[in-house]
Amino acid sequence: MRFSGLAAVALLAALGGCKGEAPGKETVSEHGMVVKPVTITTADGRAHVFKSEVAANEAQQQQGLMYRARLAPDAGMLFAPYPPDGGPPKTASFWMENTPNALDIIFIRADGTIATIGENAVPFSQAKVESGEPIAAVLEIAGGRAGELGIAAGDKVTWK
Image (cartoon, rainbow, N blue to C red; front, side, top):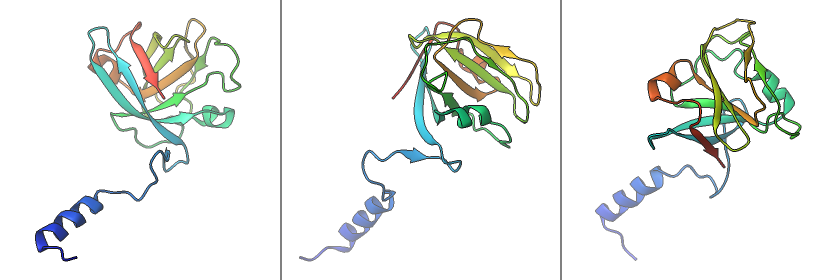
């Protein structure tokens, strides 16, 4: 079988876009954490997707985003399940020790709705940012993004 030059170029272009990963294989960050899309749908129906590392165990949740020099505007870290032992939802208290970037800390109820948002948590602060009620997950995103995107308490958060 003979390929024309144009067909060969098209084939190479198509293959160039492949990453060589098996279908369904999980994406892993440079920090060794699984990355999943987390979608927040606002009350007016707008959806915002954050490529989020998943902190699923106690060690990952204790480390969080400490020592990270940068957090992209569409990135985040999902603490799920919270608590990491998979127990029932509980009140949460986060702090910013050793965290050089301001964060919006989004506390998520078991039904997937946002309970509260600790906006622009101060870098390196040991002040507690509290959920105020039992929660089942937490999403940290770049400080100020929740306000920029109109994300508020009651909005829906989903991930797979």
